[in-house]
Amino acid sequence: MMSKTQYGDNNSPTQTPNANYRNYELTNLACNTVFAAPSGSWANYQRMEIQIFSTGAYVLTWNAVYKPINCILPTTTAPNQILKVVMEYSTARNRFEVVYVGQES
Image (cartoon, rainbow, N blue to C red; front, side, top):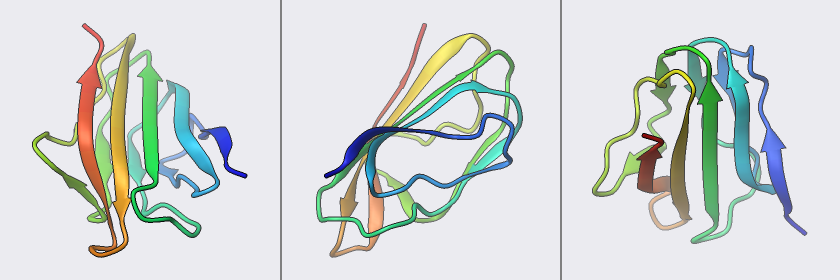
C-alpha cells in the first residue's frame, strides 16, 4: 500500500522522491537543490506531486527524467510561496511527465 506523503530533508542539496509515496513535500526548503531521479518501482501512470515551501529564493535543478508537457519546470522558488509540480510516470518512455506546475500568488 502506497503511503501518502514523504517529507524531504529541507537542508539537503539533493532530493530523491520514492515510489512508495504519492506526495513529496519540502516544508521549509533552506538551500539550492537538485531533484534526482526518483527511486523505487513505478507503475505506469502513477502520479506524484511535489510541494515546496521556502522562506528564501533557491535554485531548483531537475534530473533529465522529468519531462514537462505543456508547462515549464520551475528553476527557482519564491520566498513564502507554495510551489506544486504534478507528474505521471510513463513506463513506455521511462520518464516522469510533468503535467502541471503551479505557484502561489
